[in-house]
Amino acid sequence: MFIYHYRLYDRYGPKVLSLAILGDNNQDWRPWTYTYEELGCGILFYFPIVKLLDYENELELEDSSNPFTFVVMAHLKALETHSHPKRRYFWKKILYKALCEEAKYSEEEIRKLYHFLDWVFGLPEELAKEFDDFVEEYEEDKKVEYVTHIERRGIQKGVQQGLEIGILQHSQEALVDVLDARFEKIPGTLIKTIQAIKDKSLLSRLLREAIFVESLQVFEKQVKNSMANVIIRI
Image (cartoon, rainbow, N blue to C red):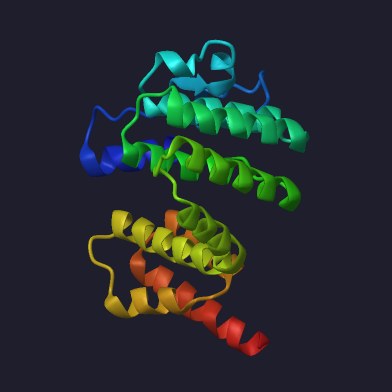
């Protein structure tokens, strides 16, 4: 939190708000400060937090048109049902119906929220198929087109066949974004090198190094060394 804060301050100046949204399932874990002191020099950094568990019994989906209400409720129910597949299936159906019937969202919001719901409420294969069948029947009965059967099957196929590609692309893009935020101009050759990396663990390590590296030149050397090590191992 402190590192992100001072880097934003350095780039954009004062009046930076750092807010931590805690989505874990530990009610007692509430970090809100960072401090250090050495040789008479020190700093105390404190920041506001939002603990999603605090809203567990307060959210009323039907009373709010704010999409974030649905996101928080889905997240909390996913935490609650983590070790209970049948109960998770039950709540996924409830939230899906609420998304289409009770909440007042636009069609585009419903599509995006459905994708979030489908992602956060992972189900075993058998229950996932049951949920797909339920949604198909629901769409036919209600004659809705928010999330079409073809689109849903496309999502499932993408998860099964294209997940690795999606993770790689996301990691590559995240790495370029971090470098772009820290350094003004990123060489095209470096971007192409990053896009050619197919090792997820290497991309993850380079992402961490990109956050802390002191210069772009040093990072480029680290990339070259890492790529050389990968070639040698192969």
